Length: 364
Image (cartoon, rainbow, N blue to C red; front, side):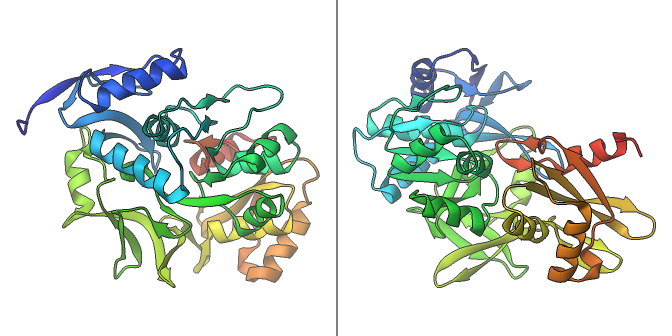
């Protein structure tokens, strides 16, 4: 194949059924049709090795178009099915949008098993049984807090992949106590989705921790490039290793993800981990959703704020007292934002940029 060869890129129709989407993805994977983008793109041509294009938004809010090859997507699907013990004829259910890699992966895994996923994205009433499914922590929270139909579906599955955002140990324990077989995944669009299951890399995937304690990933699941930002992609590769923005460590040969490099704010000279604040609050006030975010402040540098969503939420004083006792007085929030629900980006990550905007718009 010529190095500069191109192929047509077409936008997937959101009205396609799962069957139609699978047929077109199958053609794209064998180069018997155009490459597909699920979502928006200004491009009409992509490198010939690219089969699917998925947009991903990092914590900075900057969108990147990730070009994924057939070999990467199939390596991911085969590694996933093998890790789960999935057999030909087993079924997957689709609970995630196809504009994100996690939804696409469900379709490719099902293709490898010779089945069609059960489309439950807009399901009302009882859910049919499926052998495997994939969700984000927000959906798991809803299942454990009132959505009995979804809960039954997840409990009946052989395994439930949970990824897209950090899963708190407390929510994982709740799910396991309910009888669910939770598989915590780690990965990103650039790695064709989850490539580490319960701390163990999929077949062919290697994990390394850099001297700066950031997670680096190598293997056949890596994307081909960032479309239109090839220099950025090259800057994140070093001898075939993709350098993520996440901190981690290896413990008993398992990967422990500790958070993102952009997860820490400095407030009054003190380092504050936003994810640690969120996890602690979620564990103590388990029926309320929280998001921690920093707001630029002339006095503090970054002033810690807490967004609170959900019924029966604790008072601001209770939150401040709890955080002060857990982390020290420096962790007491400088402000609060009360919302009916937390704004999300992607399929499960809290949109902290949007929280800052909502705070600025809120009446004093």
